[in-house]
Length: 153
Image (cartoon, rainbow, N blue to C red; front, side, top):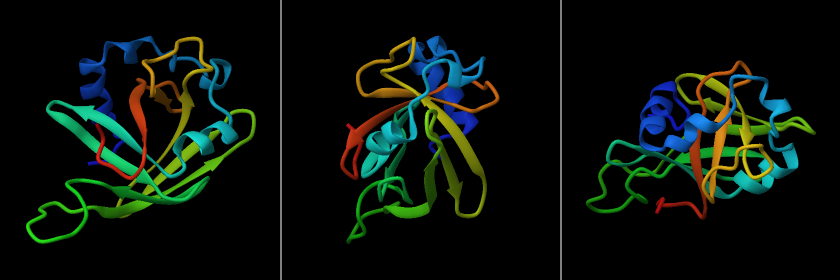
């Protein structure tokens, strides 16, 4: 599963009504998208959490600062009895200046780029959550960002 898949967006939008309030239908850069500096501070060394039907659908740790590995927390560090262990699943990179763009490249499939709306956006989501929008106006994906490598709380 990928944190920023369109299936996850539909599931999460159903569980968090605030996702419908983000204005990703227009160009996100005109709606308060975070800058590259703000994105680096937001994501670097932190875990991004997307809720699913029963708990956390995806828990992806961003190692590095403005770029690095994406590590899927899953059910914890490797060890005896740990099923579905933490695994590096790709990379991320933050680019841009005034309006930052985060691009995820997953090992074995798919590259996705997003503008992120948050506390500087016209619609502020719940504390600690942000709206990830494609440049082309798809449904917003609501992502909770937490300190550390996981698990999501």
